Amino acid sequence: MPKQTWNPDKYARHAGFVAELGGDLIEMLAPARGEMILDLGCGDGALTAKLLSLGCRVLAIDSSAEQVAAAAARNLDAQVVDAEAMTYEAAFEGVFSNAALHWMKRPEAVIDGVWRALRPAGRFVGEMGGARNVQAVVDAVTKVLGERGIDAVACNPWFFPDEATYRKLLQDQGFDVEFMQLFPRPTPLDGDIVHWLKLFTQSFVADVDESEHEGIYSAVSAQLETTLRDDDGNWFVDYVRLRFKAIKPAS
Image (cartoon, rainbow, N blue to C red; front, side, top):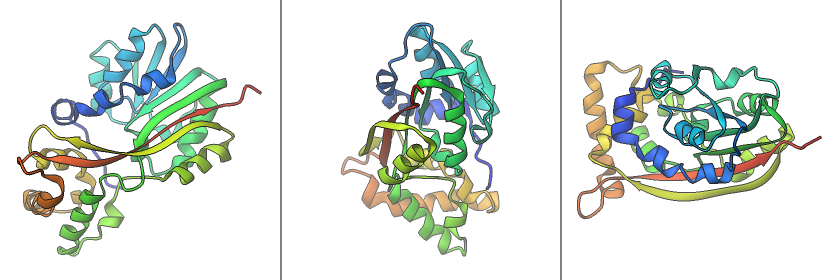
């Protein structure tokens, strides 16, 4: 799979809404003072800092060294870790994840690692892209790349499950699913959608000569004009989120 890279400054500038919209997920986790929490896919640590402010202890992990460096710059305990190969054993009361799980194409491995990382009665609270998340973008990218003889399906870095699929993955591991909801959340962008495309769709163009990238992004943007741009010229993205809370039984 082509590597997705992250520039923390550009992420904060063009995707700061990700952490803002995930803030109420912390209420679902309800971390208590002194609890040990794992922030899985911490990004630049914006939500890790909020968790820490509530008095719990937090270990923040992400696969991006750049994002981990940005989190560490906030004086957070942040480490570069592959979430599909975690080795923690009964170390946390809670595992929290916002807008990261859909980048992990081996969900069974992630969920197994979370299960082992949690202590009995620990909870796993997360939000990720769900079924048909950014579907208009995927369709436009598929069309534009297809016209260039490129198979977009093979380049797609995302795992967007429906409720039944993810519930079964959790239950097969042994979790009790306390809450799960799939819901649309059309999200306005601050600026042109090309900035969003450059940030999140790198995998689709990773094998294309860099000289062609601008043309591809422009063509995708043109495809999306009628679906993701309102009458005032403002762009939005057709997010669909899957939010859940799962409990590891006490015994």
